[in-house]
Image (cartoon, rainbow, N blue to C red; front, side, top):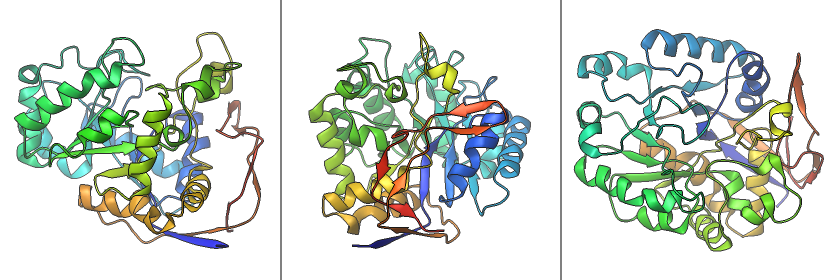
Length: 338
């Protein structure tokens, strides 16, 4: 195989940040992806129609050289009224729920995951057909946080059977098994969780550029994720969770959580699927499954990848901002044509 065509790649979990970082990383997604589901955890978070539309305009301005559709999300609040959600429904693709303080810029997230506390907003979302995306972690021991969250997914999925619930950036075999238990439960998985375990992050010299939340797990978890992705599992979508942070905030004590993969995601995925003899399922994973789950038809945008060495830049920069990508300085087997 010397070339491969990806049709309308979709990144269903993306952090574009704001300001100069947005101007830097936005085009690194819009160059190759047709659309992306954009996270709302800015400071302050995106909770109003005015803030959402303004943020979308800034994204479009940053990505103006490309055909790109940013699919917007709201930051979950318990007190969104039905009338408010009905008014904003056509401007969003989903609402993102963060447990309070569990990850970057989630301090104003949900304090209680009791389904009765969440019911007012979830009932309105269910009636209006607005999907719910969840960062599914408790505040327990870091390796067990996702596993401990499984009963909460079950409670929400069973209490609101007409609500599409997306388990974001799943990292465990428990989450893979949960996919098949409820018709209304779906998931995204990242590139880095298909490739690494905790050993890659901290087994030798600490690698801050692989530190993320949820943290990478065990080999058996990675194997379960990879098996599901390679099979083209119809309820699993690619969501990079590409989470850029300035270089100085990664290479420091108390480094920020996030892996920046947008510029190399498609190249690495083609190599991964080719190595496992599953290239026939790659378009399902990076586009077709998400189209069905979200009932969304993107504009056609064909990206050709060719078997040609690509040296990943040591860093990407804009003005005074510098961001280090996954595989910085390393050689990849595939390149994007053009």
